Image (cartoon, rainbow, N blue to C red):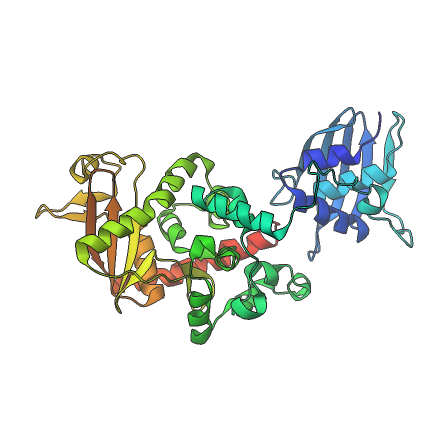
Length: 410
């Protein structure tokens, strides 16, 4: 065997880079309890962080390449940090000759070099003849903005918010990565307490996140929180799946990107039509948080003192009239007994709208459905009975989302 290389490690974990850093922390913290190598298979056990238990890990090699990794932990099929830790141990300890190797935990050396020290990053290659200036970045940012803010590089290039001025609420990521959270015995209670916000913080945050997708602060605060676009998926689910947890935590379904982009591109046109039809003004606002700090909602705008706006631009029905769209059973609008259009109450959009109304403390939603052929404007009133779902959503967050943070899913 040629030995495991750092390049094999980084290649295998290319889609889970955080696991490498957490795996190194396991290794440096002396969490490797046993290690065996035989005929291309590594087996061992790794002590879990903050838990009085160990997980068995199996690594299959193909020469010097890593073929697969399995672990008993909840993230065992997702290239977890325990697998990374065992591989890093192998990099440090496996012989470069094809012999069996067995190791049991011994006293750690006084000083252990990090992966970065052993394998320093090569000097960055620069294909440009000069350094990129702030003016260059600003120009590129403005050019991307013309294409639509859904482009991946757009948000990365957007101005970094000054936390002291525009972050009245702590981010979930800052809490979860804090030393206090890592060392706390009752993580659920600690996070629940730290997430709570006051009414003044709610109002300040809403102003700080105006611009929504164009505002980096909006992205940072939303991450790790359950937002209104996912309320329906949670309330309608019959069982909690990993895909649902990932969706709530912001790992988007790429098959729907085209539909998402269509909505982003045409939202401004739909708003323009709404204003022309109603002669009402739309006020831009940011993110509304529930006092628990677990739930959030970002309406597409506020109208007057008592209403909000939600815009939908259905991609599959983009060239249809409303009548043609309603003829499809999968469409979220239907005709009632009186022949009037209404939003289906079992649809996820109903829960999204009700969540927005309750979190923003508004009474009416102007629900706009825009296609290239026609625009429909529905008035949806707040359903006071729906408020019971806020407790259900908080329970879901406490039972399923908070535990996910301890399993590296943030």
